[in-house]
Amino acid sequence: MRSGQLCIICGSHAGTTEHIVPQALWKRFGLDPNSADLARYRTELCEAHQRATSTLHSRRNLLQLVDTGEPVTRKSLTDLADWAVWVTLLLGLCTGICALPVDESRDLLLRRFSGRTAGGLPAGIRVYAARIDAYVSGTDFVSRQIAIEKGDHVVLDHSNVPSGFTVRSGPVTATEAIGLGTFALLVVPRTYDSGPRHKERLDGVAASVGLDLIHPLPQPIPTLVPKKIDMRAVSGIFVPPGWGDDASLLPIAIQSLMHARASD
Ligand SMILES: [Zn+2]
Image (cartoon, rainbow, N blue to C red):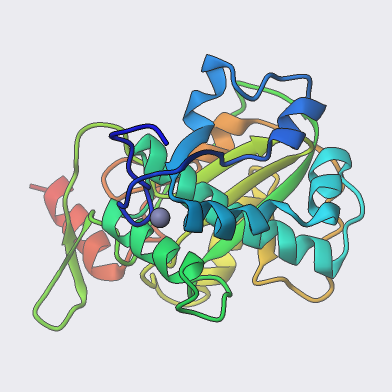
């Protein structure tokens, strides 16, 4: 055990350096999992949490899916969405760039990996995916502002209704995006409602950068035909209040506030 390293989930002394993205997967892409470039994908975990999180990566079909893009089935997409949520939460905690506040991310991970819940994903979360034919860059997209529940950008009134927002400096993100192997994945925590068909409009915006919803998984399941994907568009399509182009997915009270400020 190395001294001074604490488990990022529970804060007890860490026993192991965990590879958040499985070493087997990096190796298949010809990458050295211990290289400095991939340091952000390693983190310290205590032995109990190392054991608990390693079960995430032990699903053989999941590695095959990310590696080859096949098979696209209800089971494989369900596993992929589950993996994407927990891996991006771990990545967010270890890089400090999280869609959710650090305490909230840690609490979700503690509940998931300390056996305090039966499993399953946090309520209201949406996961989008695309199979990648080729990575491209410089595509045009319109970023959409969203208000993340439990995020630290939204100000609530006395009855817990969104009434305003704060604009923070530093790295900001409303979502977690990851490009891995044959997949682009985007995790969007539960958002405050913006009016009629809010969720359908979220899905439509995700589709504008090539993404299909995989959690909650629709019926029939998406075919995920391989596409040209711009990861900058995937990671920038949803942004916190005050940072983006289009405000129509924000709660009405926040939209009104923006209009009022703009006309001052
Ligand atoms: Zn721990």
